[in-house]
Length: 372
Image (cartoon, rainbow, N blue to C red):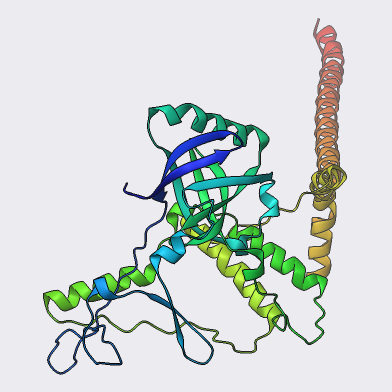
């Protein structure tokens, strides 16, 4: 990278030769002014207003304009004669916590590179000292004809410097805050907190300039065939007065759906409410009690709802089984009695038969004797 300034860092009695390099670059697309009728470039010529002649760069100098419009010429020799100790030196004046620097003061950023091998050791010393102290260095330096304020900090293994505005260059925010008295409810703050938590953090590398991308596409389309990209839809909102609570709720819902879509889920993230152990136990026992009581009560309720005269469904399985068993025992007892009766009758018949035979024999006997 090309250096834009060469000098040294003054760290007490230690001098560190360095080169100043731009740490940022602009990717914005610039345009030229053209004549709309024929496309010709519009150029500015530096013309002296007194003689109306174009003046070359070598003849152009500096001047300060007074309130009455008169010009006071200032030459390069005049500027070089000014006492400017920081003309070629970044002079460290203090070491302070980074939190003491207001971000409003920060301007352009630069990298400080060690200029030559001898500068490596003191450069590393300053870098490690800044790391260990967890502080930043305030310094004064001169660039482009004026003295400036800077802040030195460590970025990876490099010392970076941010140009700072002088404290008197920061304007006070008078008349900027709302003048009307506003009360913010806790519910609104809770929704704002929920929105912040849902949006979460973001990788800075994932952020890009959508407008510049669209502008490049437009230029490419016109270069290839003169086509025009479709007009973008205007953003909603635009200063409309809306219901703050509804807007916050919609924002939280949209953010959850967006994050769910990024992770591959079809819906938003669900919230899980923890349940205490006592509630869990009660929940587990409830189905068991319901299951134990269900067989006895459910049929009875059904029978009552239908209002049928039959009461058989209301009987329990145990009663039904007992009744069935009693019926079986009665049948067995009846069968046993029947068998016993049959047996008795058979015995009686045999006895009668035997008695009849004996009587017949006795009657026949006298006849035999008589014949004898």
